[in-house]
Image (tube, rainbow, N blue to C red):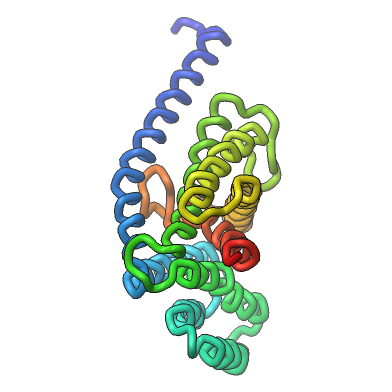
Length: 293
């Protein structure tokens, strides 16, 4: 058997990494080609169509997150997390009843969930499970309800349509720029303890595209001044990064690689919406402070 030189080992490793990269890119492209038109159709329709899409995202994401919790030995009350998340969505669709719905839902969540744990045979870890039961809808259900608030009920092109489009395309642009810039130019680790693959160079590449998206979809259709659109693009990039790192922290704590396998090349649903969950809140606050003037 012929000995293998160190150079040959490096070459083989490089070729293997290149094949994995090409396969990953191919899967991402195929998934994106299928998923993006469907998502944009729901953004266009808005209203109860948007509610249906958000409900599906809530169900799949909470199921994935609950599975991750079970993997680490936690047992949050999944049906309570589902119920509170759906309540957030319904409240967003009924603005006149929104306050009372939120008051009743959150009050019931406190009054019902903790006493339910009294009947466990083993009380060890009960407080952690109770905290996770309420944290899951705050993390997933609340931001998805903000999408509905931002979009509104009017079908087609409207103010809400452009704001939601800015969220999606700003985050997608950031993810795409960060993915390619990080692969080709990434040298300096962004958060090695949480997500070793992310780099400052990747974040810079994503920032360029998120700013471009904010300029394109707010300055012209909504009349947002260019300097505020640039600020929004920067805020979207920061929020997308934090959202991505937040889910990476959860995965690291629960010792899983992906939240699921629902989307080939992208992982689970939660892997795809993690940045959106943070970005939509930032855009909504920006809209409330700036967009209405």
